[in-house]
Length: 170
Image (cartoon, rainbow, N blue to C red):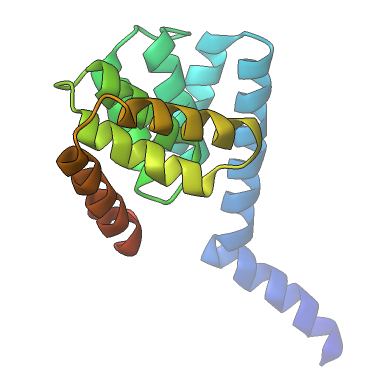
């Protein structure tokens, strides 16, 4: 009986699609990241795209970066915004600073300092290291250009966004 348990578990895992799909996705993600790191942006875009469409937040973030900067794809701030929003909606901290910058500068959207501050505030609480410091600096700098009412509105939006687990952020 014992000798059938392991093969049966392997068959069930394979049939359910749990192990092979995740292993393939992880390998493809690693390949995409390596292509990005070596500057092969066209290849990276090809590899990230299906993963992003499947909902892999880090792939969505990378595609957002690539569209924002025009690396391997046509520069398109609205498409970058779309990918950053999808990744952020999953609680992925990486794109939150980018969303703040997009709203602050009005790239692909109408300039909105309240939304920018909301995203910087969220990023400042979720990111660590240099990325976290940058978010704090951007947040603090932006508040010097805003009214008390705008700052309060941004804080309320940030709180609502986080409490909804990033489902109610727009």
